[in-house]
Image 1: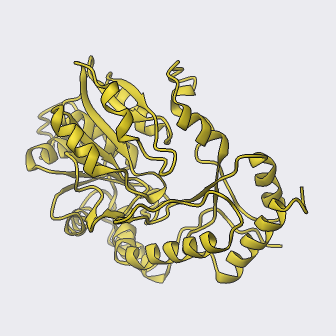
Image 2: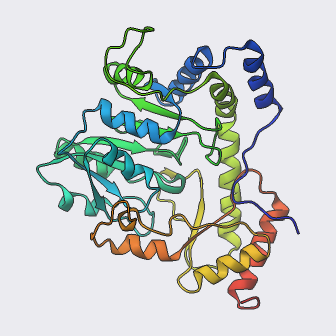
Image 3: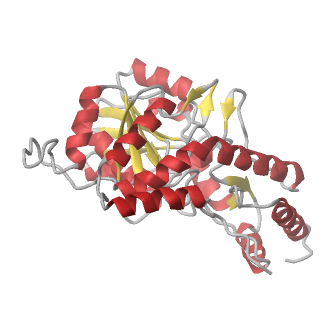
Length: 360
Protein backbone atom coordinates (compact mmCIF):
# COMPACT_ATOMS: atom_id res chain seq x y z
CA UNK A 1 0.00 0.00 0.00
CA UNK A 2 1.31 3.43 -0.94
CA UNK A 3 2.72 5.44 1.95
CA UNK A 4 1.09 8.70 2.98
CA UNK A 5 4.07 11.08 3.42
CA UNK A 6 4.40 13.51 6.33
CA UNK A 7 5.18 16.34 3.90
CA UNK A 8 4.78 16.86 0.17
CA UNK A 9 5.73 20.12 -1.56
CA UNK A 10 2.90 21.31 -3.79
CA UNK A 11 4.74 22.16 -7.01
CA UNK A 12 2.63 22.71 -10.10
CA UNK A 13 3.04 23.82 -13.69
CA UNK A 14 3.09 27.50 -12.79
CA UNK A 15 6.05 27.07 -10.45
CA UNK A 16 7.94 25.01 -13.03
CA UNK A 17 7.17 27.54 -15.76
CA UNK A 18 8.39 30.45 -13.62
CA UNK A 19 11.64 28.70 -12.68
CA UNK A 20 12.24 27.77 -16.33
CA UNK A 21 11.76 31.41 -17.31
CA UNK A 22 14.49 32.48 -14.92
CA UNK A 23 16.82 29.66 -16.00
CA UNK A 24 16.41 30.67 -19.63
CA UNK A 25 17.19 34.28 -18.76
CA UNK A 26 20.60 33.16 -17.41
CA UNK A 27 20.16 35.73 -14.62
CA UNK A 28 20.35 33.23 -11.78
CA UNK A 29 21.81 34.97 -8.73
CA UNK A 30 20.11 37.57 -6.52
CA UNK A 31 18.35 40.00 -8.83
CA UNK A 32 14.92 41.26 -9.92
CA UNK A 33 13.05 38.12 -8.85
CA UNK A 34 14.36 38.43 -5.31
CA UNK A 35 13.37 42.10 -5.20
CA UNK A 36 9.89 41.29 -6.49
CA UNK A 37 9.52 38.51 -3.91
CA UNK A 38 10.50 40.91 -1.13
CA UNK A 39 7.98 43.50 -2.35
CA UNK A 40 5.17 40.96 -2.63
CA UNK A 41 5.89 39.52 0.81
CA UNK A 42 5.96 43.05 2.24
CA UNK A 43 2.38 43.63 1.08
CA UNK A 44 1.29 40.61 3.12
CA UNK A 45 3.01 41.79 6.32
CA UNK A 46 1.65 45.32 6.43
CA UNK A 47 4.26 46.92 4.16
CA UNK A 48 7.07 46.15 6.61
CA UNK A 49 10.64 45.99 5.35
CA UNK A 50 11.50 42.55 3.91
CA UNK A 51 14.92 41.08 3.17
CA UNK A 52 15.20 37.71 1.42
CA UNK A 53 18.01 35.33 2.40
CA UNK A 54 19.01 31.73 1.82
CA UNK A 55 17.26 30.14 4.83
CA UNK A 56 15.06 30.76 7.83
CA UNK A 57 18.10 30.24 10.05
CA UNK A 58 19.96 32.99 8.21
CA UNK A 59 16.92 35.22 8.62
CA UNK A 60 16.99 34.78 12.41
CA UNK A 61 20.78 35.12 12.54
CA UNK A 62 20.90 38.39 10.62
CA UNK A 63 17.94 39.76 12.56
CA UNK A 64 19.87 39.28 15.82
CA UNK A 65 23.05 40.85 14.45
CA UNK A 66 21.24 43.84 12.94
CA UNK A 67 19.40 44.46 16.23
CA UNK A 68 22.69 44.54 18.10
CA UNK A 69 22.47 41.29 20.09
CA UNK A 70 26.02 40.43 21.18
CA UNK A 71 28.28 38.76 23.71
CA UNK A 72 27.02 39.22 27.28
CA UNK A 73 23.39 39.53 26.25
CA UNK A 74 20.76 37.01 27.27
CA UNK A 75 17.95 36.03 24.92
CA UNK A 76 14.86 34.20 26.16
CA UNK A 77 13.90 31.28 23.90
CA UNK A 78 11.63 28.24 24.11
CA UNK A 79 13.34 24.86 24.24
CA UNK A 80 10.49 23.07 22.49
CA UNK A 81 11.50 24.05 18.96
CA UNK A 82 14.00 23.22 16.24
CA UNK A 83 17.58 23.82 17.36
CA UNK A 84 18.10 26.70 14.90
CA UNK A 85 16.09 29.03 17.13
CA UNK A 86 18.70 28.75 19.90
CA UNK A 87 21.69 28.11 17.61
CA UNK A 88 21.53 31.64 16.23
CA UNK A 89 21.74 33.09 19.74
CA UNK A 90 24.99 31.21 20.30
CA UNK A 91 26.24 32.24 16.85
CA UNK A 92 26.18 35.90 17.95
CA UNK A 93 27.95 34.89 21.20
CA UNK A 94 24.89 35.68 23.30
CA UNK A 95 23.36 33.33 25.88
CA UNK A 96 20.08 31.51 25.26
CA UNK A 97 17.91 31.33 28.37
CA UNK A 98 15.36 28.56 27.99
CA UNK A 99 11.73 29.15 28.95
CA UNK A 100 8.98 26.55 29.39
CA UNK A 101 5.96 26.24 27.12
CA UNK A 102 2.21 26.43 27.56
CA UNK A 103 1.28 22.71 27.56
CA UNK A 104 -1.87 23.39 25.53
CA UNK A 105 -0.41 25.50 22.71
CA UNK A 106 3.23 24.30 22.81
CA UNK A 107 4.36 27.92 22.44
CA UNK A 108 6.48 29.85 24.94
CA UNK A 109 4.42 30.53 28.07
CA UNK A 110 4.07 34.20 29.08
CA UNK A 111 3.63 33.09 32.69
CA UNK A 112 7.19 31.74 32.69
CA UNK A 113 8.91 34.65 30.96
CA UNK A 114 9.21 37.32 33.62
CA UNK A 115 10.98 35.15 36.20
CA UNK A 116 13.70 34.47 33.61
CA UNK A 117 14.45 38.15 32.98
CA UNK A 118 17.71 39.51 34.43
CA UNK A 119 19.70 42.71 34.00
CA UNK A 120 21.42 41.06 31.01
CA UNK A 121 18.24 40.12 29.15
CA UNK A 122 18.01 41.93 25.80
CA UNK A 123 15.43 40.05 23.77
CA UNK A 124 12.74 37.41 23.55
CA UNK A 125 12.50 35.04 20.61
CA UNK A 126 8.98 33.70 20.22
CA UNK A 127 8.30 30.61 18.09
CA UNK A 128 4.86 30.27 16.49
CA UNK A 129 5.03 26.49 16.70
CA UNK A 130 3.24 24.11 14.35
CA UNK A 131 1.47 27.06 12.70
CA UNK A 132 -0.19 28.45 15.85
CA UNK A 133 0.69 31.97 17.01
CA UNK A 134 2.14 32.36 20.47
CA UNK A 135 0.30 34.66 22.88
CA UNK A 136 1.76 37.80 21.33
CA UNK A 137 -0.53 40.27 23.06
CA UNK A 138 0.73 39.32 26.52
CA UNK A 139 4.31 38.74 25.40
CA UNK A 140 4.48 42.12 23.71
CA UNK A 141 3.29 43.76 26.93
CA UNK A 142 6.07 42.00 28.84
CA UNK A 143 8.69 43.01 26.26
CA UNK A 144 7.61 46.65 26.40
CA UNK A 145 7.48 46.66 30.21
CA UNK A 146 11.11 45.48 30.41
CA UNK A 147 12.37 47.32 27.28
CA UNK A 148 13.22 44.06 25.50
CA UNK A 149 13.51 43.42 21.80
CA UNK A 150 10.84 41.06 20.47
CA UNK A 151 11.71 38.68 17.65
CA UNK A 152 9.27 36.27 16.02
CA UNK A 153 10.36 32.92 14.62
CA UNK A 154 7.48 32.51 12.19
CA UNK A 155 9.14 29.77 10.14
CA UNK A 156 6.12 27.49 10.59
CA UNK A 157 3.34 30.04 10.59
CA UNK A 158 2.93 31.81 7.24
CA UNK A 159 -0.24 33.93 7.48
CA UNK A 160 -1.24 32.71 10.93
CA UNK A 161 -2.86 35.52 12.90
CA UNK A 162 -4.35 36.83 16.14
CA UNK A 163 -7.56 38.84 15.82
CA UNK A 164 -6.66 39.41 12.16
CA UNK A 165 -3.11 40.64 12.82
CA UNK A 166 -0.57 38.46 11.03
CA UNK A 167 2.41 36.92 12.76
CA UNK A 168 5.57 38.72 11.76
CA UNK A 169 4.01 42.10 12.49
CA UNK A 170 4.04 42.11 16.30
CA UNK A 171 7.73 42.43 17.08
CA UNK A 172 10.88 44.30 16.12
CA UNK A 173 11.84 41.57 13.66
CA UNK A 174 10.54 38.27 12.33
CA UNK A 175 11.98 35.35 10.41
CA UNK A 176 10.14 33.13 7.93
CA UNK A 177 11.41 29.93 6.32
CA UNK A 178 10.68 28.62 2.84
CA UNK A 179 12.23 25.20 3.30
CA UNK A 180 10.69 22.41 1.20
CA UNK A 181 8.30 21.19 3.91
CA UNK A 182 6.98 24.59 4.98
CA UNK A 183 3.50 25.96 4.17
CA UNK A 184 5.05 27.64 1.14
CA UNK A 185 8.47 26.85 -0.29
CA UNK A 186 11.20 28.29 -2.44
CA UNK A 187 13.20 25.06 -2.08
CA UNK A 188 15.48 26.76 0.41
CA UNK A 189 15.12 30.32 1.58
CA UNK A 190 14.05 32.74 4.27
CA UNK A 191 12.65 36.23 4.77
CA UNK A 192 13.54 38.79 7.41
CA UNK A 193 10.63 41.10 8.28
CA UNK A 194 11.62 44.34 10.03
CA UNK A 195 9.93 47.38 11.48
CA UNK A 196 12.40 50.01 10.18
CA UNK A 197 14.45 50.75 7.08
CA UNK A 198 17.75 51.26 8.91
CA UNK A 199 17.76 47.72 10.30
CA UNK A 200 16.66 46.36 6.92
CA UNK A 201 19.63 48.03 5.23
CA UNK A 202 21.94 46.47 7.81
CA UNK A 203 20.52 43.04 6.93
CA UNK A 204 20.98 43.68 3.22
CA UNK A 205 24.63 44.52 3.84
CA UNK A 206 25.14 41.49 6.05
CA UNK A 207 23.67 39.06 3.51
CA UNK A 208 25.95 40.33 0.72
CA UNK A 209 29.52 40.48 2.05
CA UNK A 210 28.84 43.85 3.68
CA UNK A 211 28.23 45.71 0.44
CA UNK A 212 25.28 47.34 -1.28
CA UNK A 213 27.34 48.45 -4.29
CA UNK A 214 29.81 46.07 -5.85
CA UNK A 215 33.27 46.17 -4.26
CA UNK A 216 32.23 48.94 -1.87
CA UNK A 217 32.23 46.83 1.28
CA UNK A 218 30.99 48.88 4.23
CA UNK A 219 31.02 46.18 6.95
CA UNK A 220 32.08 42.57 7.43
CA UNK A 221 29.31 40.40 6.04
CA UNK A 222 28.29 36.96 4.82
CA UNK A 223 27.14 35.36 1.59
CA UNK A 224 23.54 34.53 2.53
CA UNK A 225 21.76 35.69 -0.60
CA UNK A 226 18.65 34.12 -2.08
CA UNK A 227 18.88 33.31 -5.79
CA UNK A 228 16.42 34.45 -8.45
CA UNK A 229 15.70 30.75 -9.10
CA UNK A 230 14.46 30.27 -5.55
CA UNK A 231 12.57 33.58 -5.57
CA UNK A 232 10.78 32.64 -8.81
CA UNK A 233 9.45 29.52 -7.10
CA UNK A 234 8.57 31.40 -3.91
CA UNK A 235 6.63 34.10 -5.77
CA UNK A 236 4.23 31.56 -7.26
CA UNK A 237 3.85 29.77 -3.94
CA UNK A 238 3.03 33.09 -2.26
CA UNK A 239 0.06 33.52 -4.59
CA UNK A 240 -1.23 30.10 -3.50
CA UNK A 241 -0.69 30.42 0.23
CA UNK A 242 -4.32 31.07 1.20
CA UNK A 243 -5.56 28.13 -0.84
CA UNK A 244 -2.94 25.78 0.61
CA UNK A 245 -3.50 26.98 4.17
CA UNK A 246 -7.25 26.49 3.77
CA UNK A 247 -6.61 22.87 2.77
CA UNK A 248 -4.40 22.34 5.81
CA UNK A 249 -7.07 23.81 8.08
CA UNK A 250 -9.78 21.65 6.48
CA UNK A 251 -7.66 18.50 6.81
CA UNK A 252 -6.92 19.32 10.44
CA UNK A 253 -10.60 19.87 11.16
CA UNK A 254 -11.42 16.44 9.75
CA UNK A 255 -8.73 14.73 11.82
CA UNK A 256 -9.83 16.50 14.99
CA UNK A 257 -13.43 15.41 14.45
CA UNK A 258 -12.60 11.75 13.81
CA UNK A 259 -9.48 10.74 15.75
CA UNK A 260 -10.14 8.94 19.03
CA UNK A 261 -7.52 10.70 21.09
CA UNK A 262 -7.74 12.80 24.23
CA UNK A 263 -5.57 15.72 23.11
CA UNK A 264 -6.14 17.37 19.73
CA UNK A 265 -4.65 20.74 18.70
CA UNK A 266 -5.96 23.72 20.67
CA UNK A 267 -6.96 26.92 18.88
CA UNK A 268 -7.54 29.88 21.25
CA UNK A 269 -10.37 32.26 20.42
CA UNK A 270 -9.25 34.82 17.83
CA UNK A 271 -6.20 32.78 16.77
CA UNK A 272 -5.75 31.42 13.23
CA UNK A 273 -3.80 28.16 13.21
CA UNK A 274 -2.35 27.33 9.76
CA UNK A 275 -1.31 23.76 10.66
CA UNK A 276 2.24 23.43 9.49
CA UNK A 277 1.96 20.32 11.62
CA UNK A 278 -1.05 18.50 13.03
CA UNK A 279 0.14 17.44 16.47
CA UNK A 280 -1.62 15.35 19.08
CA UNK A 281 -0.56 13.98 22.47
CA UNK A 282 -0.35 10.29 23.28
CA UNK A 283 0.31 9.69 26.95
CA UNK A 284 1.13 5.98 26.70
CA UNK A 285 2.90 3.87 24.05
CA UNK A 286 3.55 6.88 21.80
CA UNK A 287 6.55 5.28 20.09
CA UNK A 288 4.77 1.94 19.64
CA UNK A 289 1.81 3.68 18.02
CA UNK A 290 4.13 5.69 15.77
CA UNK A 291 5.86 2.49 14.62
CA UNK A 292 2.56 0.74 13.93
CA UNK A 293 1.33 3.69 11.89
CA UNK A 294 4.52 3.61 9.84
CA UNK A 295 4.12 -0.13 9.26
CA UNK A 296 0.70 0.63 7.81
CA UNK A 297 2.08 3.31 5.50
CA UNK A 298 0.94 6.28 7.58
CA UNK A 299 3.68 8.88 7.74
CA UNK A 300 4.23 10.42 11.15
CA UNK A 301 6.96 12.16 13.09
CA UNK A 302 7.91 13.61 16.46
CA UNK A 303 8.54 17.35 16.65
CA UNK A 304 10.60 17.44 18.85
CA UNK A 305 11.90 14.29 20.58
CA UNK A 306 14.73 16.06 22.44
CA UNK A 307 14.24 19.54 23.92
CA UNK A 308 16.91 21.94 22.70
CA UNK A 309 18.27 22.53 26.19
CA UNK A 310 18.92 18.78 26.50
CA UNK A 311 20.93 18.55 23.27
CA UNK A 312 24.66 17.97 23.72
CA UNK A 313 25.29 21.24 21.90
CA UNK A 314 23.65 23.10 24.82
CA UNK A 315 23.55 20.60 27.69
CA UNK A 316 21.59 22.87 30.01
CA UNK A 317 20.51 21.72 33.46
CA UNK A 318 17.37 23.89 33.30
CA UNK A 319 14.24 21.99 34.31
CA UNK A 320 11.27 22.65 32.02
CA UNK A 321 8.55 20.17 32.96
CA UNK A 322 5.99 21.10 30.29
CA UNK A 323 8.65 20.91 27.60
CA UNK A 324 9.97 17.55 28.81
CA UNK A 325 6.48 16.08 28.96
CA UNK A 326 5.57 17.32 25.47
CA UNK A 327 8.72 15.80 23.98
CA UNK A 328 7.70 12.43 25.38
CA UNK A 329 4.09 12.60 24.18
CA UNK A 330 3.66 14.57 20.93
CA UNK A 331 3.07 12.91 17.58
CA UNK A 332 2.40 14.65 14.28
CA UNK A 333 0.27 13.23 11.47
CA UNK A 334 0.04 14.24 7.78
CA UNK A 335 -2.02 17.39 7.23
CA UNK A 336 -0.43 18.95 4.13
CA UNK A 337 -2.51 20.01 1.11
CA UNK A 338 -1.54 16.85 -0.78
CA UNK A 339 -3.44 14.58 1.62
CA UNK A 340 -6.61 13.37 -0.12
CA UNK A 341 -9.96 12.70 1.54
CA UNK A 342 -9.39 8.99 0.99
CA UNK A 343 -6.02 9.24 2.70
CA UNK A 344 -7.50 11.18 5.62
CA UNK A 345 -10.02 8.38 6.15
CA UNK A 346 -7.18 5.86 6.02
CA UNK A 347 -5.19 7.81 8.62
CA UNK A 348 -8.20 7.95 10.93
CA UNK A 349 -9.11 4.28 10.47
CA UNK A 350 -5.58 3.02 11.12
CA UNK A 351 -5.00 5.34 14.07
CA UNK A 352 -8.26 4.45 15.80
CA UNK A 353 -7.71 0.74 15.22
CA UNK A 354 -4.24 0.97 16.77
CA UNK A 355 -5.49 3.02 19.71
CA UNK A 356 -8.10 0.35 20.43
CA UNK A 357 -5.28 -2.17 20.70
CA UNK A 358 -6.24 -4.26 17.71
CA UNK A 359 -2.85 -3.84 16.09
CA UNK A 360 -0.55 -3.39 19.10
